[in-house]
Length: 196
Image 1 (cartoon, helix red, strand yellow):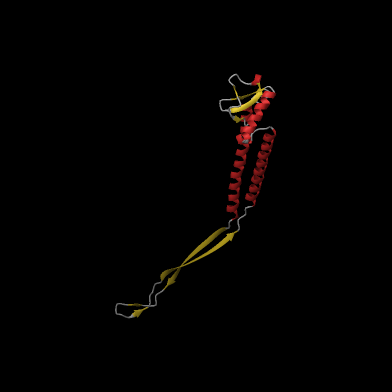
Image 2: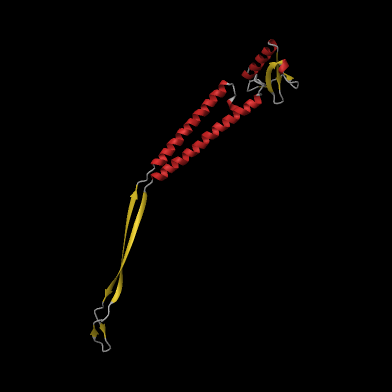
């Protein structure tokens, strides 16, 4: 006999001996309560049928007047906020790690200098109209250009980025611890985590 079937039969037996009513709602979820607490639309469960056992197991109405539905919504909101905070800090940690990588890279600067000098040049000689060689009387200028470049590299300083990464990493660790504590708190309150 399958375990769910054995559980159903056991619940039916307990319901009969303890004067409890076993009923199922529209979703086919089985509830075991005192007959007075069962809603008027409840359908009693007989031994011939098999329904899904209520996964939550907590009362529909708590002693303080709150409903299970409202309580579950509160737990879902708390889990949603805790998980969103962990994810937000993970994204910040990834971004901070990227900044550390960028800041750690060497920075190289190239300086380039160009010098231009005009040098007077006098040609040695020239031919005159009669074909004789005669020296030039005037000077011509010639531009001389010289270019030099030098490259210097400086190691990147990522100390401030590393401090930011360490801070956000600690915050993420704290948020993950808070999420684990919330899970323990929910387990202690018999809240089904699979629904959170």
